Length: 458
Image (cartoon, rainbow, N blue to C red):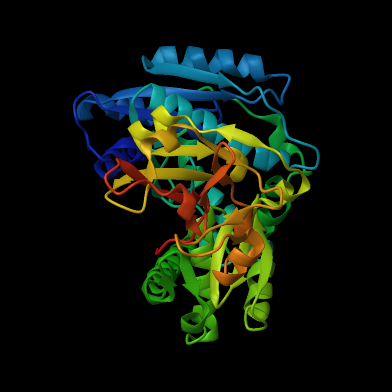
């Protein structure tokens, strides 16, 4: 029973030790439980060792709706959890993969969303996943075959914090043979998913056709590829540290200064640019986009690039900035939205989704807008013909000329204009119209427009 003792101990003790409140009385540990061999063994091992740690265990099952056996699997999992005297929760997925979307990718993303929801609802602090050494080797090979960089080749982390939860894979260096022995010795019943034999899925083709040949030629391939992934994880962490140090000097206010970026070596430029884009957009950046930007950012003075879902990168006067794509606003005019004065005064900010930004208000002693005028404020789409007065003793000029004089780029001119009836009050990029300024002794407020997606010092 040495394998059982080893896996029982490694299932929960090490993971609980790494969690935010290790082994605290009343702590809830969740186990992602498909009913397959690996998650069955992990749930059993966790339940067997949980009492000594003073933790509660709950099994989380996701009903994907992809198999005719899915209802039977749900029933089996609920019964198995009851036998172990652990909690049980499940989710039925109500969505489906869109046309052309990978079923594997859809199922993975939907599964993690469902697991996150259940774990948070049950106040779990730690979620255990049953991935083992072969899973890690498969992930490494799949990422390599896709041309991934060091972060991709780092494969699956043993532990990570995401969505207010600790996620851990306590058996990531454990062989599937050891898990099979554990299941056999304890005579655990589990599900055999017939979809694991379908070769239309890349991971299945790798597991069924490639790994047996690889194991025959290199018996220790799982451990060796696991070690390679750990080296890659270290390399990825180092690249992140280098990018952080470089961006501290490259980023200024809300812009990415190209002159400073160009002082770096080619490799560090690529690393810093990718890190900045990923940090700002929250999306991974395709390698072909990074390569294109590396070429084109050294040419010309202005330009725009689509860098993610609804996000555009702009180059203007030697700096890069990110903004939600507002190009569709140029197709129509006349849109008016009344500003909720109560929210603006109480919270200091009003979100305007149509324009992809927020209007902020704060009390000031001078050069602001009166409370009375603020109460009548409305946001308008630019229609043409508007005029802006930059100062009390200056003539009103067309917005086009005012924007040009203030060097406001074209893409930043799509923000809303703010009016009090027919009087223009505030223009993002230009400020408050002189004709709308409050009297000196009057209670007044400064206005600021903040786009949703803007550059920040990392």
